[in-house]
Amino acid sequence: MGNCVDKSNPSSTAEIAPCDFVKTSETKTSVTVRLYGSATSTLTAYIRFALVCKAVTVRFVPTGSTTIFGPELPFLEVGSDIVSGPRETLIRYIDTKFPQPPQLVDSLDGFDEPVTLIARALMLQHRSLLWHLERMVRWVLDLTTRGGKKIVDPTVGSPRMEFRKFWNSYSNLLELMLEHAQMEERIVFSILDKADRGICKVANEEHARDLPIMNGIKEDIKAIGVLDSGSAARQEALSNLCTRLKSLQERCKEHFKEEERDVLPLIEALELSKEKQMGVLEKCFAVMQLTHSRLFSFLVEGLLPLEAMQYLDLIISCRGEEEAASTLNKIFE
Image (cartoon, rainbow, N blue to C red; front, side, top):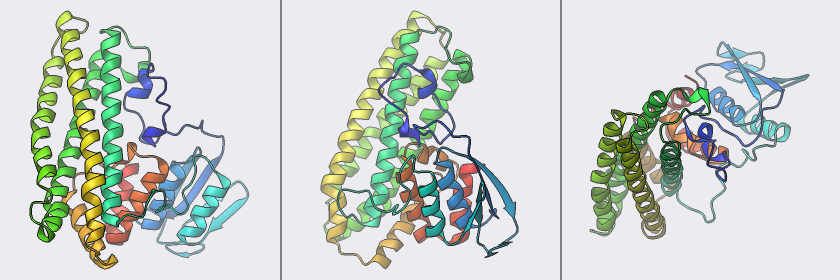
């Protein structure tokens, strides 16, 4: 996934600029996996995503609702292997056959301590947001260093085309951050405030303080877009933009750290049943309609493969099968 990219070498524009949503640290193998199944099946879409996370080439062959193995059961063809079965069987086969990047099995594990389903969803969103913020900071640093010179990687496009991609990426990030904040305020903080009024006051105040900063950065990017590439004015504006993005990045790091340390554990203290947790999580996801439609690929771009599978498991656990399949298929559109 997005942050599987090696961040130790920030010199490559190709690493910083937008690219396909799945990025692994492995080179794709010569293996081609054929997946047969219904295009509207949640299980088929889930297995398709799990395969895309691996270093293999995936060929999806849509079938009717029934395959040779029965209704709604997809199957894989890998060389002479033909494998079908329930989700656990297919996932374990994929992980055994293609161990890198590791591990898709037991995909709801991976946190240092047990956390509620609600807290897990928020923490995964935090990880995605921080990855995208880091990418934006590195990207503007690279733009400043190059000073309007011709880019090395032609796949990124001309300087004007690249900056348009930069603008689009920040716009997506801003929308994701706003929807995440609205979800916390309307659903999560509201539930906690019913148990102890004013308990989330500080977190709400931080949201309010950060909004003008985020909108200001958007206006800065718009203004830079009309300046001549390589001009002194543009270089100065890029330098100022870098400073503001770094400031926002640090504020978000601290804010998310405080939320995960001081606020999210309080959800555990409410001792909600799993059924009630599912109900709250469903309300959270209902608020994030834009994120789970147009911006879904952008969200999972900022997650490791294991984290992306965790997030998909959360969606499937509390949404209807048809809606879950629709969300998953947004990735492949």
